[in-house]
Every structure is written in C-alpha cells, then in structure tokens.
Image 1 (cartoon, rainbow, N blue to C red):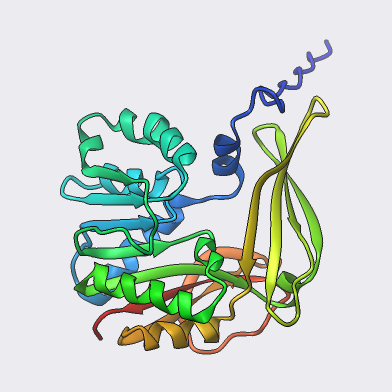
Image 2: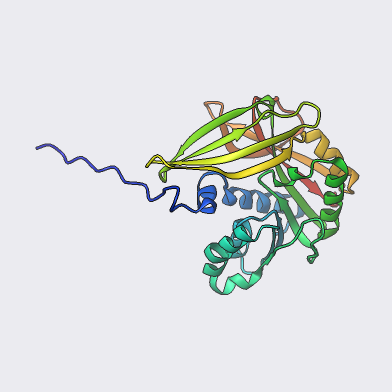
Length: 276
C-alpha cells in the first residue's frame, strides 16, 4: 500500500500580511547567542553575573526582554530613535513578560543624548553604530558609552569585515518558516568607506517586500574601532573571533584572539572594558 504524500505546508507570509520586524527577527538576529556571550564574557572577567543592561539601537528590544526574563534581579534599558520597532517590541516581547515587563524601560531617544543609570553592560549590535560615519562622532558616542557604564562595566559591539564586505552583492537565503531573506550591498566608496545596504523579503506566492530595511553606513575596520575605544577612555579592548566548522563556515563560537586571517567575510565582537 502506497504511503500518503504529505502536503507541503503553505507559508503564512505574503507581502501584504507579513510584519517586517517579525521577518527580521526570523532571519537576521540571534539575541539568544548575544545574551549568552554577554553573560559568559562578563562573568569570566568580573567573577559575577551582570545585572543591568543598556541596549542601544534596540529596535524591537528583544535582547532587553531576554535579559530580564532569564534572571530575577536584572533590569534593562532599550534605547532607539524609531518608535515603530519599539512599539512592536513592547507588544510582542515586553508585555508578554507579565510582571517582569516593569524591569524593561524603553526610551525613544538618541543614543548621543539619552540619560540612563550606569549599567554593567552596554551593547550596540547589528552594526547599527556604523551610522556614525565621522571619527569625531564615533568618538563622541564611545565617550558617552564610557560614562554610562559602571566602573567595572563592559561595552560590546559586533562588526563585519573582509574583502567581501566592500563589494556589491545580492545574497538570498531561504528560511524554514517560508520566506526568502535577501541581503544586498551596493559598492563601497573607496575614499569615505560609505556603503548602502538593503534587506528584501520574497514569499512563496511570488510577492516581495523591497527594501524592508535600508542602512547607510561607513565600513569601519576593527583596528580603527579599537583605537577610538581606547581614545574614549576604555582601559582594554578585546577581539572575539568566530571559529569555523568542518565546512569552513562560522560555527557561532567566539574566542578571544590577537591575530586572525582576513577571510572574505567575517563576523566578530569587540569587547571594551572600563577598567582592567
């Protein structure tokens, strides 16, 4: 007797029904990995668990929500200029926390002028701080971060690099939930290092969200950023490099490194310490 064929599950996503923040979280961002990296790195250095977080360029505040969800004494401040992702995050990540929700404070403010209590950990993830294209502006931001940290605080950013980051490309990737994520880079300006990047989404019904997200950045090198962090007052800046699996792909495990091969594209963390 022949086995019945399973019908292919029809994706619930179309260009008219999909929410771009849900799509972003389902294809780009891995806050659980960032959260675990922050806790482990801080604990290894300071021999205590960090309790307070400021998430700059917070978007949907997902990292802040995880921060308070996983420990009863933690508190987070989520800072972003855009009210739309903050509203999505409040409805979908913060309010479902119940009583824990009061330990997440969302602030619709500029990271260059926002005032918050000093925190153990401050983050700027998803390359968002690359909107500061002038060195003087990046230095100003890093100095404000320095002042916003406790004396033994830690500042963490992620960054990408390698020759592939400087070249135009359009890279699609099918997601298990039934849509295609497309990363597009335009050519980098050789003098200013300015680059325009876009995220598009395509769906199984043939529809597409064009330029769901657009980023206007400067491509910063790790060496440049380390120097600016030290100029801002940080005592030490460590690079954490991603390891590779047997196929040569990134394995999601980041270890402190002082030298690394400049692969075609790579992802890394920079960890700046207020005190040694």
